[in-house]
Picture (cartoon, rainbow, N blue to C red):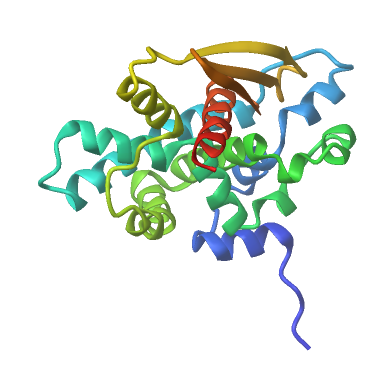
Length: 233
């Protein structure tokens, strides 16, 4: 009877990347709430956040090169739209779900009980931290291979340069001579490692719509999406 692989080894298998330094993988999977709880509630920077910073840059370079080679006839503006769609929080969370990353996260009891393992912001941050850890552990080429494999399928799903919800709302309003949409922050709260924003989008003569997210930008997109649903229903 075969033994079940340890959780982190199982994750390495899905990544198709064996870590040489297991401590880096542990750092990438350890949420800031764990460090904060160990420091009697005081907020401190963590390796998770530093790896996230690094992984964001590695991901950006790999995706930019992937787009540059995959769409040789597209102008910079169209490439930028594709890039934004591929590195946004929702896409990172989607990749994290594919890797079943939530099950491997090390969270404080409070963060865990509040649904941190399924929180798109947490999953997106952890995905970037994981990419940063692979880069430090093995260098750019292994990180490039992992990102290329995980993002290639997403690349194939985008047949044309995408327009985000805010762009579509702006085009809808301008086509009707209503001026630019206005985005107003209605609520802002939550802990530093998991903030919460509620934003309302307003257009003259149109019923406003609200959206929420873990960043102001995400909440604006959610509000725009909500407004579009109302306009098109």
